[in-house]
Image (tube, rainbow, N blue to C red; front, side, top):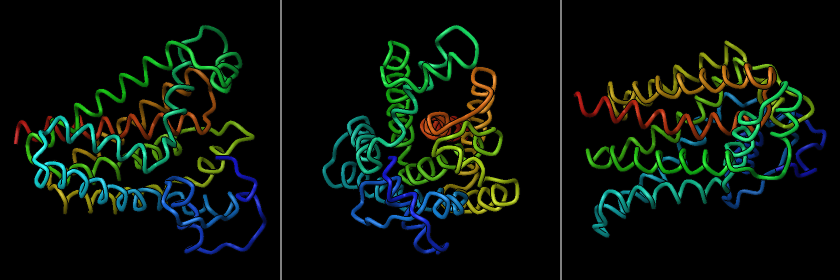
Length: 260
């Protein structure tokens, strides 16, 4: 993730920045690189890049469920695997690293040191298993209601969760995460979230809106946990927020689907 080509000085280009974000967060062969400063100026646009990724995942789910006639559980596992692979497992290290930092006892400085350590502890593995298995279960639940469009919503709103955490956090510098946090402000966060909510409503009505709310709740929780444990936040915290945000979005939509 820390390719030196991200740090080249250049003039800001919205198109190049969006393609840079796409390159940064997926394995799609776009291969457009830009400086981290330019790329993160459009951090607010990140959910809409993953709207596209969500559409691809929904197509994958549709093929598995309706054409190959796989059951909902198998389809959910395939969709989750597809999302992890196409995003290059980009945030899974954040889940593990933050979990290790939270689990260790001590002052914030010690917790940060553990979070940034490359070794993986039992808390990291257990947390990754919990988040991954619950996410598959959440996908299985919405697919059981034949709500394939929920795949698009949960992937898009995962980034809304990340932006919520970024908005409510103080950055740990140096680090790539600090650029995303510094570029997230109330104005662009509000604009991004309003557009995300509109898209979610068009895709799923009230259920879609609940998916957005779930992601926002997730972002608030992760920001609070990070503040209490580390005081500051980095890319690992944002990565955890992304993965838990997808899970909470699915959870809120699953509950809404049952009652509606």
